[in-house]
Length: 67
Image (cartoon, rainbow, N blue to C red; front, side):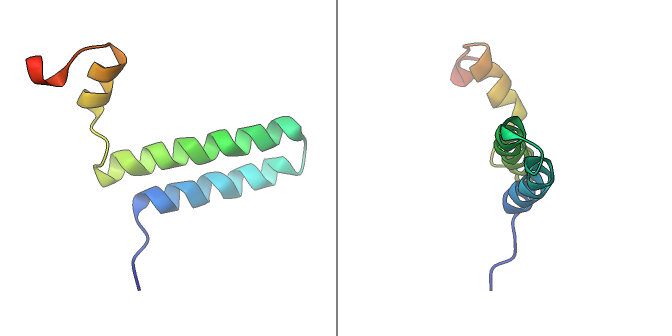
C-alpha cells in the first residue's frame, strides 16, 4: 500500500475545508477548488517537486539555465 504524499494530503485538506464552506454558496464551491489547488501547490513545495527559485524565475520570465 502506498503512503500518502504531501501533495495528496494537501489536496484532501483543501477539499475538506472547501466542502465545509460549500454548504454555504456557489462562490464557496469555487473557493473549494481554489483551496484544493493551493493545497496541491503547498504539498508539491513540501515534496520537492516544485522548486521555489525555478518558479520565481519562470514567473519573471527568466530562463533558469542562463544564471
